[in-house]
Length: 388
Image (cartoon, rainbow, N blue to C red; front, side, top):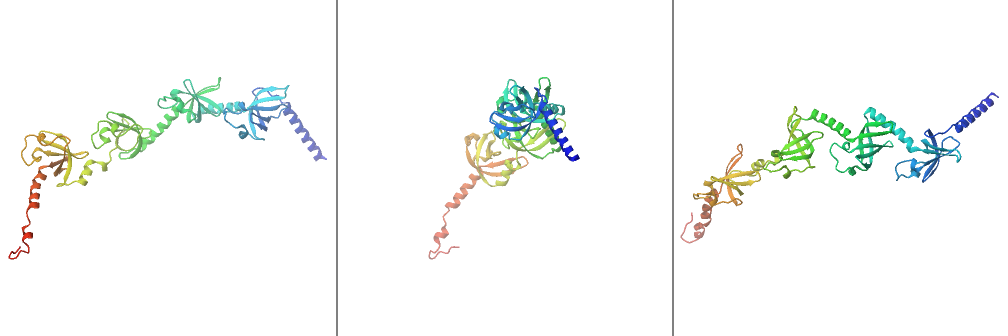
């Protein structure tokens, strides 16, 4: 008997709670939970525990006009909503999920502002003076000057891109916030700089991007810190401009040549030892070799000739011909290609001596040797002649 009475009391309590819930007054701005009862392409129906039927129009579900409502929501889903309008005569209550999400999103944004947390979002619009980034259902304004750590010429290039930013200002009255992508980039750059200076050492190799060029060299981003390749370090041969070797945007392999910790300056090396023309010359040429050389300049005492790019040799006026000449220009001109013999090499002073005369002096002896009749061969076998 007691069990029957307890069951009856529970049924009465449940009925009372249900009635109380149904009679609980709904009002504009109230937050409620709803259970999806039906999904249509342009709206969903929900049960909010009230006498009125709950309806959420598609425009109050999401800001994404391309979203498929039928795929986003399903029967029996539980969602948080805000009451927009109560129509007791028609027995309908209009609700919004989007605005409920926005309130929760704004709370998250306020918290991010207080904590200095980095948020992620998508650039959805370009507006006057900046862009709008959607995050947590809220659109954050980011001024043009805050969209990067360098000037962005066309803000439209940011559209639909995922970005990371910090909230730098909130307005509770208008429920708006201002963000900065530049603040995140500056923070990341600072962290990279600290890591770089903690680990950098002379000789260490880096891969970096050429950021800018000057008349005296190229600046390379090593990851938060710029280093400079002096123009003399760009090539083993003489160049007039860094652009002859690298361009802005090129990815290059460099090594740390020198470090000024006080001024925070890095000098970079770019030339590779194996490309040193003198190393190539040392490997491929020796005293006594004959090389085809190109006359590159004329002086009163001789002519300089390029043996290979980066290595020139001097043909002294006394070594140009096998007779005495008054002027070098009587025999040679810039641009002439001639054969010359290497007669001396000074690697310490990087000097090479060449001689055309040495080749000319050898030529008659060879010709005489080639033209001398082989009498022995001619007389061999002739009766009465002995060939020794």
